[in-house]
Length: 294
Length: 294
Image (cartoon, rainbow over all chains, first blue to last red; front, top):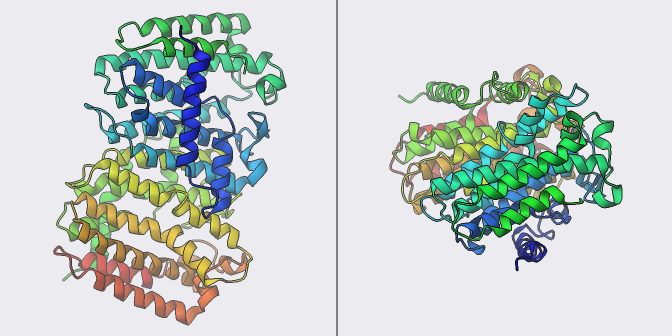
């Protein structure tokens, strides 16, 4: 009997241990910078992206140990986006995962540089990836750079800021969602599969799964911001509406948001059918991201 | 007869053409972000780092075309450091190369993200490097990430901010200089040499040259800030002293700064002796960086 809770807990423990081992120690100069990097990375995220990376590798018969560096890289990169998004000139958030944001604890300059350092560290870690044929470490690094760059994650962030206060617009929302969250979730899944030597045909499956699970995740995020309590979420709720953020709930309403998330999760799970390995974790994770309470 | 002016002008033209071709077009969404990236990259820098990268490749018989992607990557990465250094929470500078800084023109959020995007793009470009044996693209990318990371360029920036207003301290100065500027100049030279297939023994030569030329460059920068006119420099002069920045001039005085820069240039040129290719450009560039007027 497969238990997702056990699966995620076990993988998160491995990932947290590895992050702790691979991040520069806080005792190493410049100590405050390394402390800030560790503070944000070890703040207790769900490790969704590295878990997805590992689950994708397992779905084509790969080993978790071999996918560790790409998995850590995706998490470091994700953490940099959170630190920079929280800065005063961006979303200006004081809380993240129930704790003060990096710039509240370490000041703006150190938070900015800790984000820069984590982005850079992600590529140092990608350079140490050892993917199976037909993939090379540099192809994988290029894939992550494209996903994170001005046509990916950063494009989503730019348009998200630009959309604040404007009329709800479904096209704009789709552009933002596919990039701001979707592209990195898709990339995490693809990197895991590629590291394990997935074929081009398999890779198309992972792309479809990643697109759908990523969109479901973002819709669930918007639902939570609109309906959750601050205790559940670890940060203020209703902040999207107050700031007139462009969200799935604002554009399509709550009941359609819930229906679409459920449909996408179903489609994501069905997309996995052609794969030969164990796809239960990926299917369960997709359900979990859409149904989570925080 | 070798002319450095001609050499630099020719290489800078090739580099500028390639940057224009490889940067995302401003007409592509998000247009404001891509415009900001282009504004900062095309603001007319000296292209010292990519020129060094090419000159290093030529010093071991490599071809300029083959070294293009690492050369562009180093320039993109350098530009990101300038954009982030200029932000209000860092050095808070309004002018760079005689033009308003990115955040003055595009706002803080876009400038921050343009910097992030250029750092990311540097690694997208590194993934496309095609180095000669025994080097691989991922080894080169790892080298750049280490140079740029929390133990390299970013360490220098953190300690530079921390040192403002403190007593002049030679050890601290050496830590900052070797990282903030030196490490990326050294890396540019090494990446060029590695792309051209330099041996491990040759690489030690390039490291020594890069260390010495890089330090000479930083000393010259400090001398210029203390002695130049705003017209020569394209930015306010004396700003280091006003801000009580830790500079070579503040620690060692102007005449020792000049003598040390001259000595380092001489040693950098002498270090090149074991190489078989044309080392005149590298020797001339080292002299040039120490003697330049802006």
